[in-house]
Image 1 (cartoon, rainbow, N blue to C red):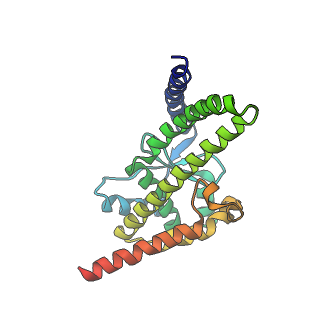
Image 2: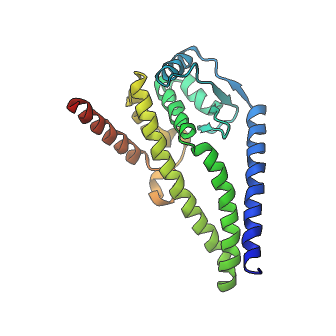
Image 3: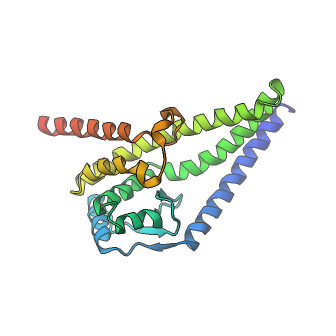
Length: 232
């Protein structure tokens, strides 16, 4: 029982963190967002809604400066004010921003947004268990090792989700008549737009794949689907 108690406590902690994270995220988004009212972007979301046989796709502006898009656990899609401002300034096209919306729709459709919240709680629980176990055998640096192992597991899962959401977005953009071109062109701008230096970090340490790898994956899908259509 003594061996099981830390694990049971960690699981309980993970469940509590999940509930707290969902509540806190929803509260923050509700308090700091407004529905998108841009006529050009709304036309593009209508095209995507038609391709998905949906009456409409609601998109919200989240009032923070970092350039990002996100899918909430309740299925809502958000574009940050910073990202929208890049579009207003002409640094990002409407089609490119539509590709972000399509990508976030992929996270929702594939269950990533809800699972990520659960994963976050599970990662905290896993971190606690590893700290308890590794710390017994390797004092002082056990906490450091536990944090590294947990971060590597989380990064690997996140990169897999990004590739899946990219593929969903590519299919949706092609079906809705927007095409995958804006999706690829946006990836060439992301590092500059987000002011990161991702290229200097090993890909396996990143929560998102490198831009060139994502573009290559999209082009592989385009060739594969093109061959399938020609063979039909």
